[in-house]
Length: 265
Image 1 (cartoon, one colour):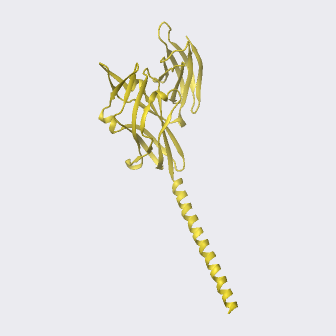
Image 2: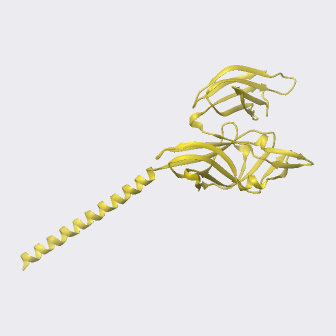
Image 3: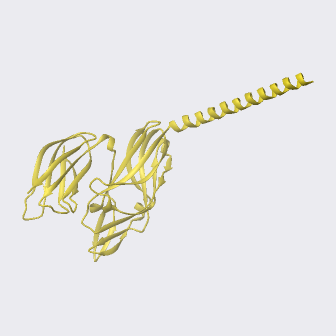
């Protein structure tokens, strides 16, 4: 009887080991499948930046960010909703406003949905920014890019506060957003500073008849980002009595910030 009991116990232990091994392999298979599914998707991060403007603050109410992909399907990204001061993110500074996983394939556009709590501060006084219902329902920004599976992508929304805030007279202002989408992976930039130091001095870079502009910050520095590769003519236009300065034939390459150094008037 003892011999039979020992054999039965050994068989039971063997069966338990086999069962545990089977469960372990099954778990690894499911984990592997989940990992493969994750790798089939692309990851997108959307960040926001701004060209400086001659205001104390420009507060924009960001509600959500959607991206339209294959077959016109809209995907709502994980959005850091809130009220942002655009002037906090100028001359190279930016902030993440949304991110999420997407099915690999073509992406046509981003839709930025704004709320109604938008304001501009002028000489210490805050004014409401009336926002057309079309902007609240979603600003459609063209992307037209193909996302590969397992790859992380970054898109920068360049919110031009100077052009987006429109004075309608009698102390009233309207928000008509002017936004440019920038893919840092296929663009470069131009940076520099001016002397004597001046704020809100316009700097314009032109190539093949297309112009991009920014303004200097309080330290006299400027950055024009999202520039396609090419040769640019840069014009810095200070206030009188100084005269504009033009710098010709500056080359911009992808992924590089071309430094102009100090532009002296």
